[in-house]
Amino acid sequence: MAAAERTRAQVHTGLAHLRKVAAARGLPPVIWDRKWGYRLLDDAPEVWIGYGM
Image (cartoon, rainbow, N blue to C red):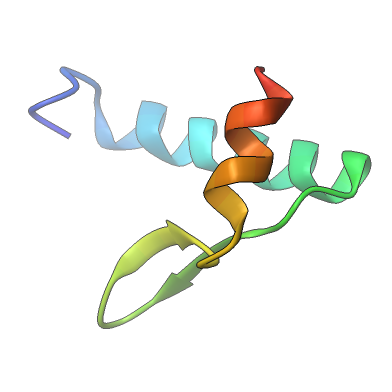
């Protein structure tokens, strides 16, 4: 969070927005797990890059 100069609340809101956009548009989900934290599925970066939010 410090690297992006955003508060914890701003990061949480941004991630929630990305998850809603992904669900609404049929994009691969943004997932969370204990080992890696928030991330995209292995094949998802190309789809998100091509999406160009």
